[in-house]
Image: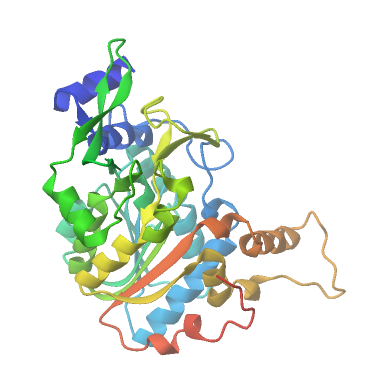
Length: 378
């Protein structure tokens, strides 16, 4: 903790915004969570992603990518933000190669030096396809524009946020300071940040008294940058989030920011900085309005299970000649994973898939937009 606080103090004196606290706690190269060498993803880490359930997740997206690339005559180029340990990239590239499509470009932006090293190892079999960058700025210096597919999974939820609270009299920004014992605690300050005040006026939510919520200014900047960079293509954003109406429910009055350590939720995000993941839910109404403002067109916004079915998840089911499968076989495990992805209350229930396009014309021809014969309800 002492080293972490010293790092915070090297930037400025307290109090610090939650955005500054999260930026250091997650991304600082010396004390940040994503920079340390501890396993973060999967069974032995702090949290799972859909990528770690089974490759059918990536394969469903890969089928959709290839369908859109073919129908829109796009280059077979994919850019993934926040690729983590490379599970999605590896499975997607394997599917593409297995379908005899060798000429593929796969760009990755991953800020974690720890994960960049893992990515180099995991994707070593694709040396002619993969390029890994530490930042978007580094990538833009080499690729000044882009045509193709942009993808992220649980990327927005890890962006540093500002935290606000509405009282009867005023809107407060909740910041971070040290108490007399040297521990990190919250401090409420009248909100005078013009970016936050504009955000509330433009994107909401208009909070009831004593509600808290997160404001993701970094998300807006990121959307503006990728929209400018993308000449022609599709943006897939997978994450968990709420609409403004959901943010106003009584159970959300304390906001959504939290930590995760060894697969357990930590209510106080100020605990163990640099040693746990910190996330907040995406404000989908803000995301969708910002994408509209920058000239993107929404193709689809659906729950993850509904997307996967539309993408062809059930076509990946395995069968045998006699209709039975060995419960220890890879085929049986694949079918179980497919069931898990569409099971009510399963992992997909918490996630949404948002798809935006720029410069395209054949959205109605996408396999995604064909009738969902399974009719999974929202």
